[in-house]
Amino acid sequence: MVRIGDPSLFIRKNTELLPSPLVPEIRLHVASDALPLWEMTEEELEQAGLPPPFWAFAWAGGQALARYILDHPNVVRGKRVLDFGAGSGLDGIAAAMSGAAFVLSADIDHFSGEAIRLNAEVNYVSLLVSTDDLVGQPNRGWDVVLVGDMCYEQPLAGRIESWLRGFAGAGVTVLIGDPGRTYLPKSGMELLATYNVETTRALEDNDVRRTNVWRLLKE
Ligand SMILES: C[S@@+](CC[C@H](N)C(=O)[O-])C[C@H]1O[C@@H](n2cnc3c(N)ncnc32)[C@H](O)[C@@H]1O
Image (tube, rainbow, N blue to C red; front, side, top):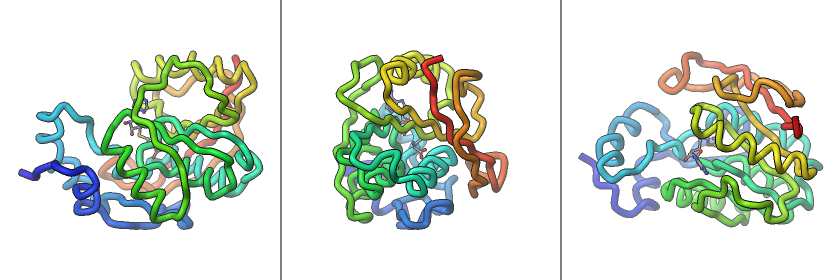
């Protein structure tokens, strides 16, 4: 059984530094073979009350959103950006590279917090990390909120939709990257771009997922 111990050491020992398929400009500490890390950590993470290692993958929604940001830097340039549910930190890193004035990468998983710090460093960008649960909290001056692949689970998607709609209604640009997850809002969104994202069969049913970038409307 693997000892979890120091998150930074654990991440560096169990991942490889690889470019993301759709976003080769950004390298991340990711699991090159998805299953072993997932299985290896499952038992101990579960015992420790920790979630599975979402941070060890660049999810399809996050990759599409990062590609969109890098190709449309004006969306974030000079802006205050929140990367919500940041995982590996991919989208916040893309925003920082594209000239965002300030980036907060938020994920409630402490391992994710550490992965984001490591990934920001190897990509030479500066951002802040929060592991607080921000859902329901008022806008702290965000101009743009990035949401990469967060609609995979009903309770979570339900909690975040009305919170994010409130931001959209107040003029915040809320961008969602999503490969057709079940709990994506069914209406009140504007389609901005579509990408074919290389994925792994161990995580998804396919080698490629058609993935959209949406702007959430106030409804
Ligand atoms: C499927 S991953 C997506 C990660 C990344 N955005 C990407 O696209 O690669 C979903 C992430 O949401 C995080 N998460 C779940 N509930 C959250 C919450 N209430 N606040 C912040 N992050 C949350 C999980 O820890 C996980 O890292």
